[in-house]
Length: 194
Image 1 (cartoon, rainbow, N blue to C red):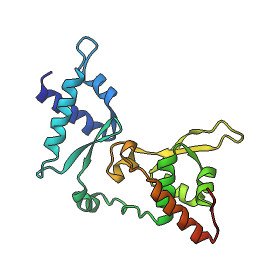
Image 2 (image 1 turned 30 degrees about the horizontal axis):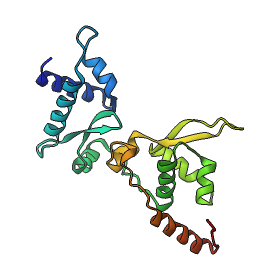
Image 3 (image 1 turned 90 degrees about the vertical axis):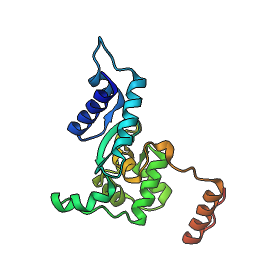
Image 4 (image 1 turned 135 degrees about the horizontal axis):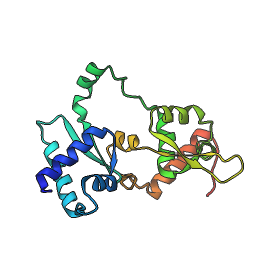
């Protein structure tokens, strides 16, 4: 399969599937046991396709989500697309939801009780909203009494924040952690010893 056909085949598969497709599954689908697709050729083809789709005269783009690939509409056309398919408005993330989401993103997998311990308040509503928005999901159960649900982020989280993997989340510096501690002390009217 030459590069042009390989690019077209990748585009066809991603278009037909609609969701994110794992690189391994793509390689299996595109090649055969007798004639597997060379991973280097695949990477070249996917890079070229990504570059082709990122040109200004295209309405879709190819994104990578933690080793998976997906075709999606460019952000600037969301409103137009919404008028045609009556899509719901984008979800608004309140400070409470963002705080809860950041805890899940940095501490995953994490239980609801662990989130509540960090936040210091109940988080049932926030967790349920984030699950409804498909930004977090159940990723397993903790091997402890009651087998509490473990939560982690989803591909929609990566897509929504424009990152391709959790490795792209910014590191929190010790200075920032100290600032957070001081703010928490001020808000709660207590002193936290470390």
